[in-house]
Length: 419
Image (cartoon, rainbow, N blue to C red; front, side):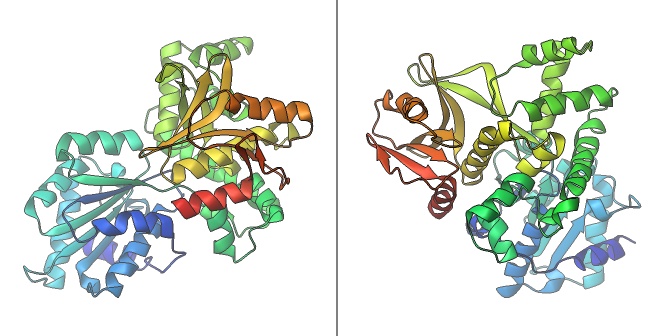
């Protein structure tokens, strides 16, 4: 039965759209002893990224029988529920295939967090040295916590995000232009919704959102008051890009005659972060060169999922654009903060290696007053690092006292080219 499960899962291994920027980050770790951990939000494309790796391995001569792929999501009869079941499945496979001792086995396990005590068998396989192991999961805390405890740094981790705008266009073979960006801004980059008709996209996005919330948060953390939890998610959707803290959320719930303790609210926010649905980002004091943890901003992992929660209203356009800039940065490897400079705020400070960027985001530069407001915050920061204002429109502004204006599409293209 285990062997049949493996074989049935392998039938799903089909060539897919090549996610080049992610593959370039993991390719250098292929054919070595590091465990490859692929994490990210459910339905964001982790499985198809594994297929891309499998396709590559076969192209360089790895035999099909040396590759084992198990997707826990497809195990509808719960055949593999414990590490011992997983070990038995692999042993059965090796016996069936009559693998020689010198034939390396490449093991791919999708959504491994749903297998009890999975970390023990991964540690055992790692010690044996006969396998190259790839695992995926939809819970950042579970995987990183268990792996750091049991493997002492002998793994590398890669986060997969929904399609960025460039991938969105390449996948559909459409032009990179403002019209297509408008659609992306409304519906986001969840892979399985991209080719759907617009009139059903939000329905499917709502279904995906319910699946993420129910499976990765409500069930995993045994949340009883689901309605109250959903109100918290809606609050976050209505407040993307706004500074807030758990106390603000408590006050919001109190205004609705709802009671929830601050520790519980903080836990709920952590659960959502661990499921990759939202990303809280800290403030960074530019003068003091330190993070400020009292208040944060929150952005969604996919703007389409956010819009499925809250009406796509014009008043949120600037914040939605901020969300896209944030996703562009983190999906290209930047660590992102909200900047604080005295009593002024900088939308984003991005850091990678020894590079820093200071970024303001604006919808339209509709007047001299707006231009002065958006650029002046950056002008006050005395640094040689790049400073820029990113906007929706393709306005011909160029540089403003040394600060560059970049239309959003140019910004995304530039970020992807730099990697």
